[in-house]
Structures are given as structure tokens and as C-alpha cells.
Image (tube, rainbow, N blue to C red; front, side, top):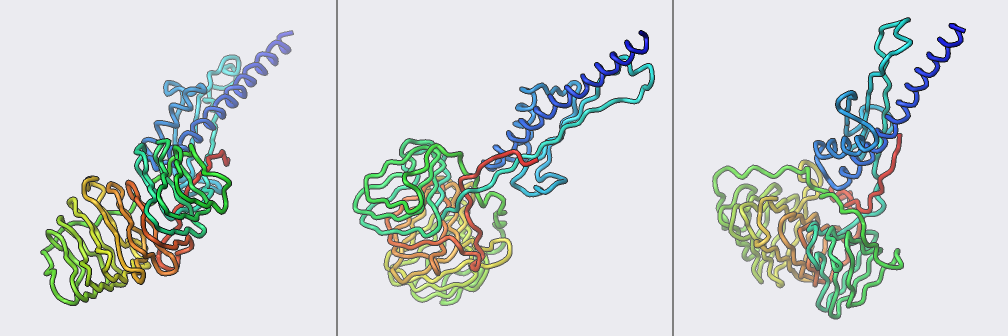
Amino acid sequence: MPVIAAGAALGLEVGSWYYDQLKLQQAADAGAYAAAMEDREGASSGVMSSAAQAAAASDGFTTVTDTFTMNTPPTSGPNQNANSAEVILKRQETRYFSAVFSSTPVYVTARAVATFTTAANACVLALDPSVSQAVYFSGSSTVSFSGCNVMANSISNSAIYSQGATTVTVPCLMSAGGVALNALVTQTSCKSAMTNLAPVADPFRSVPEPTVSGSCQPSSGKTLQPGRYCGGLALNGTVNLKPGVYIIDGGSLTANGSANITGSGVTFFLANNASLTFNGNASLNLSAPTSGTYSGMLFFGSRSNTSSSLIKLNGTAGSVMTGAIYFPSQPVSYLGDMAGANGCTQVVALTVAWSGNANLAANCTAYGMNNLQVGGVVKLAE
């Protein structure tokens, strides 16, 4: 009988450890999933960790007796990428009958990895989380998106809005809120707009801003060099821009009606609330770098700029602007009959108002641009 009782006691104790491990695995699964959800929306690792701990705590994890670790990317396994989060939980079990035989600590560990995969690509992304008409199509324009969608992060019922005689052809309209279509919109891949989706993380959030320093460059002449331009830059007549980063430190970047502007491998960085206005008769042939820190970035607005500094892009039908137009804190008005080479233009801004004619495409890696991934789905992977 003593032997039978001892065996039963040991079995119960080991069984309780196994049951604890199952509960800890459930908590790890919940934590990893919560972290990946935050990762999809562009949250920092600190925010991801807090969300993971809160989710794990709801399933029995406690900081008093358990150890929590979160890694992004994961430190092992097949999903070591920035779209994945790994949560590892560890708990020391209490010895009862087994303490008669050993005093070595007993630990149970649970590990889970969650990842998000993207369902589609976009050419236009509006980042404002709540405003109505975050993406706005109007006028008598005709715009076609080939292989790339239009996405709005706003939760407004009219996050994407169309009116007037505009004609839009797009694979899918995608919104964290709703859409209000009062003009012709043809969706070639979706029967109707995809609404109430999760917001999309700013795809350029990790691109560093150039340092605004150095002497002020002269703004006149037929050939301009990269550098800092204080109080704005007015482009008049025929101007060639040498490759590099042009820092517009305050004021406005403008091109008048008779301007003929060319530049290959250029990036314009607008700082200190600088604005941008290109006249509708200006002839523009601009392209972003195809490698380096600002690969694919044609226009870059400082994240500290205010929304009152407007961005107005216009140009002739023959104008070409190849690269990303990125103004995370400023509204962009895209007015001209233009696009990038082979349709390679991306617009990521606080809001986007579109009334120009253009054909945009998705596969632009040859021009240094990555796809704008939207429609991410979160799932447990390990």
C-alpha cells in the first residue's frame, strides 16, 4: 500500500505539471497573437510586449511566478522575420511528494510564434485614422490602378469617397471604415469594397529623416546640387537636378508654369513645415534613387510637419514622376495628368485627394520601390 500510494502521489504531481504546461501554452499562444496584431499596425516592440503580456495574463500568466520573453523577429524557427512575434513563458513548479527524491527545480516552458501575411498590394495609402474622405476621387479624371489597390486607415463610414464625373478602375478598394461611392468605380478583383479591415502600418516608418544641417545652397541656375535649401526652392525655366537629397528647409518647393525640370536619383525632403506646389503646365521628369537609404523615395515630408502645410502635385500629361510620394503628416492633392515610368508612383500620405488622370502599377522593384503591403492576416505559425 505505501508503494501504491507513493506512485499515485507522484503521478498526480507530474500530471499537475503537465496540466500547467498546457495552460501556459494557451497563454503563450494568446500573447504571440496579440503581439503580431500590434506588429501588423506598426507598433513598437514595447507596445507589442505590453499587449502580449496582457493577453497572456488573461489566460493565467502571472509575473509573480512566471517569466515572460518576447522577441521580434523570433530567435529560432522558420519565421525569423519582422512580421512575426515570439513569446516564451517559463514557470517553476512546486515540488510536493517528489521533493523526497530530488530538490532540483522543475520548470515548464511554452513557446508560440504568430505572424502576419499580407493579402494584397496598394498604390495609394491614406494614414489618417478617423477623418472622412481620407481618399477622395473627384472631378472628371480617369485613373487606373493595375495590380495594386487603394487603402484608407480611417474608420469613418466614408473613408474612401468618390464624386463627380471621375472614373476609377482598381482591383479593390480597402478601408478600415467604409466607402461612399457617388461616381463610377470599377473593381476588377472584388465584387464590392473590402471594409472594416485592420489599419495598415506606415510602410516607411523606419526610413530615417535626413539631418537638416549645412550651409544654404544657392537656388538659382540651370544646374542644382543636392543639399539644404533655406526658405524654399523655386524652380523656374529649364533646371537639371544632380542626384542626391534636396532638403527644403521651410518655405515652399515650387515649379512655375514654364518650368522644365529633370532629375534622376533625387529625393526631396521637406522639413520645418515646407509645402509643395507644382504648376499644372510645368514639365517634370523626376525619378528617385534605385538603391541606398532613400531607394524609391522621390518626396519625403518630415513626420513633424503639420497638416496645414499642403502638398499639391500637378503637371502636364507628359510629365513623369517615378517614386514614392510620402507625406505621413500632410494631405496630398494629386491633380496632374501624370504618373511614374511604367506607372510606378506610390502615394502614402495623411490623406489623398485625387483629381488627375493616371495609370499606376504595382511591380516597381526595378525603380527601387517595394510593394505597399495591405490586408494583413494574423495567424499562429508555431
